[in-house]
Structures are given as structure tokens and as C-alpha cells.
Image 1: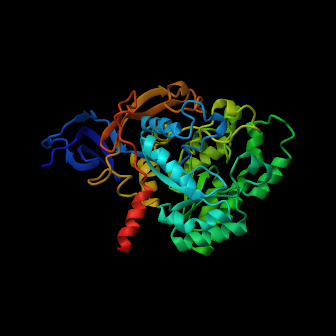
Image 2: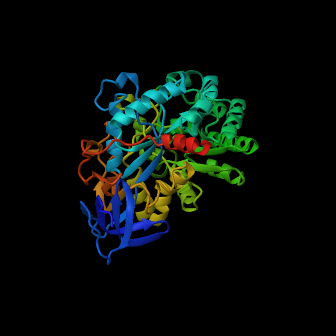
Image 3: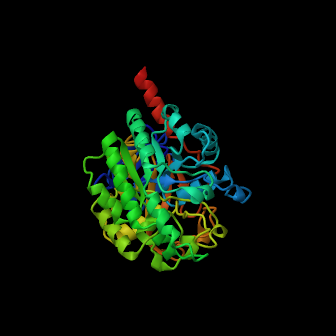
Length: 469
């Protein structure tokens, strides 16, 4: 028998829809053996005792914005274009997240230029594996789609709500109208790509905002009302309708309300999935967060939170992204001027474990589906990712339970606040294994001894080359 690099002993592992008492052997960064507790122990260079704790696959964040930094914060520690990949991937590992589906930094210029320099930054600094999403915001990006596919990009963000002054203030983001959306979906369908739709109807947002910006500061109630659930429902319905016409795979991203869920029910024959975020299932405007809670789509009301949990329990929400943004607290002074976006890449898994499993009774296998397996299947990473099985990447999380308060000061992220400050976690990562290496020991992430992550887009390039030969 081949000598193992690491043996995780006494694990209570979630494997597919079962829970198994086992030892997990790791060799060359992959799972090599899964054996019962009572069997003979193989020889290993290092042993890690899970001591009967739950062990699950590393989490996959389907919606991250590592490296989406603003020029005015470039000189701040951890908020620069390169250093941000190190800081936020360190935070991710502390939260049991081992793979990020990360958006290229948005801009109106060539998408492939952005891919080039961002993958260089990730290769040098990122501690987790990264699959880059592209985007379509103008005719230039449409013309780059063939080349982007050749570079291994298979999923592309399309914005619908941003126009006029709001678009200009976002520094590089713009939206497609419905006619342009149809053309983009047609093109993606022909190339085998997938559209990631930010579903808010721009007309509804524009009209709703016009009557609310009379108060110079604004409140989160105003912000929520300016981007009502009708905007999400309308845009979701149109996107799904056009996806059916063009036979294009789509994901409605960061779903915040039951309106998008209801739109999805209207198109059962479309190859579509719904992604949500922990903040839409844990935060609401009644919490009184103020400007730090600004995000688009907005956090909503308690009744919307309950409706989304019902959709999760009914498996209508497929997977989760953190929508992690790295704006510091001083970028969020008033609601109307604040940058939209929340931090939370290190809290995606702990929050879903706490709120979903411990408090609402979702099974651990279902939590694994939502945080790992479903995303791996949808984005072409399964069974390399998303499962504990022989041959899969050795990305594992050993869980702890009890009581632990969220404190921004204790996070490894460069962001200096948390909208979840003081929230009590009841389940969280005890240790994280990434690629067969102990990446988080329960206290620290030792980035000096962890290999840098891989750019997973390369696997699609290799697969395409192999099929052609």
C-alpha cells in the first residue's frame, strides 16, 4: 500500500447522502483511501485526529469578488490588487471555504486583459483554488466570447439594473437591455456557456428610486424600497423566458426574495439554477444596520427571509455565494453614497451550518449540497470538488459545535467591519485541509507553508485540447 501523506482519523464524514464513520487517507493532494474506523490503519507521514467530529467537503463560494478593489484603497493593507487575494483567501480557509468562483474585476475594457493580470495575482498570492467568471457589459465583451471560452471561462455575469448616474458611480459596471440580453444568451448558447444574471429590472429601480432620494442620507428601508422585489421578479421572469427561447443555461444570482423563486417555477423546462447568499437568509432591514448593510439586491424584511428559507428547504435554491466585497467601513457613511456590497467569505459555511442545520433542521448532507456538491456539479468541477470520495481533491473541513460570537476584529479578512457582528455561531470549522495540507489549524492560517491555489479554468482548456486531439 502507498504511504499516505496525511491520515484523517476518527471522522464522522458526510459522503453523498450518508454519514459514515471512517478514516480518510490522503496522498498527493487527493483522497486515496476511505476505510472504516475499525480497520487496520495505513502508514502515513502525518495523522490528524478528528476525534469523532463531522467532516465535510471544502465549501465552494459561487460568487466572490476577491480583487475587486477600489483605487482609493489600493495603499491600505490587504486592499491592494495583489494583497487582497492573500488576505481574503486566508479568511476563506478559516471559514472552511477552499474554492472560490471569483468574478474578474469589472470594467468596460477588454475582459481578457483583466483575466491575464488577475490570474497572475491569484497564482502568486491566493491560497484557495479559483474559477474565474467572466462578464458581458458591451459589444467588446461580446466579441471576446470565443477567446474567453478558449481560456477556460464558461460562465459570464450579465447586469440588468445599472444605468445613468448609478452606473457611472460604480466605476466600470454597466447593464444590458433586454434586447442585448437576448443576443448575449443566443451567443452563449452557441458556445456552451452559462449566463449569470443580476436580475433587477432597471426601469422599476429607476422609478422607485426617483421618489425616495429626497432624504439626503436615506435609510436601509429606503434602499430596500428603491429596489423592490418586483424588480427582481420581473427581471428574473424575462431572463428565464429569453433563456428558454435561446436554449441557454442561466443562473439567477444572489436571489433576495420569493419573486425570483416564483419566476423560476414558471419555467420548469429551462436549464436554470438559483443562487442566494447568507445575508438574505440572516439579515433584514428591521435589524437597524444602517449604511453598512447596503448591498444590491438589498437585504429585505423578515417575511422575505422566511420565504427564502422555505425555498432552501424545498431545494429551489441550488447553491450559495458570499457576494464578498472588500469595501472598508468608511466607504459606507450614508445609504445613498455608500458602496454596495458586504463582506462574508469566511462566514458562508458557518452561517449556513448555524442557521440552516442547527436552528432550522436541514440535514448535514443537504448543507453539503448547498455549500459544495451542487456548485461543483453546475460549474463542471465534480467529482474533483464537492464530494468526499477516492480520487477527489483532498479539501476537507472538520467541524466544531458550541457557541462562538462573530467579531470583525478576529477575522482574517482585510475588511474592518462585519454586518454579522455579535451573531452567535453554533457550528463552525475546527480545521481546514486544503489539497491534503492542514491549511487552518483552528487558530491560524499558516500561509507560508500552504501551496498557492490553482486556476481551475485551466482544466477546461486541457479538456478541450484533449477532445480535439
